[in-house]
Image (cartoon, rainbow, N blue to C red; front, top):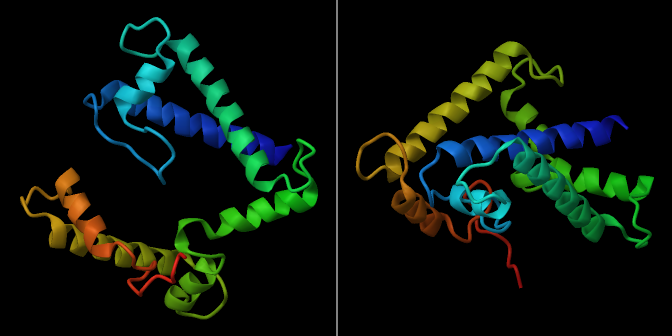
Length: 183
């Protein structure tokens, strides 16, 4: 039950955040994420703005939440409901947890890699000082990345600069090594 509530809360935050972005972002500004359909502000508003006033009111937002919840449930069942009974059994839920635990970091060993890199006292936990060191390292790497691709010098990457970065890193693994063949 707690996982259902957590998932619903996370979905509500994601949709609410997208709604806020959709209200403030310039029309057509891309907000893509892992290739899951159109994610720019204009498409989001167009999809859920039933009265066509150019913004989402509370009723439309609630409908968007319900629709996204149903879409997410359908995707989860399609992906993890191995016995096709319309419900995720404990084994299927565990498979889903394992799949998501690795997330975008290329596998479930992300936590182990973080401990290996930043657990200075080797106690198996990132203490507050170690977490700060990790944050500082990631901030430094991000700044170097932005500096490398920020051709107009404005301190952020526009769509053309992001496209150049994607092109350069296309086909590489999570830490720059060659990605395994996808064939």
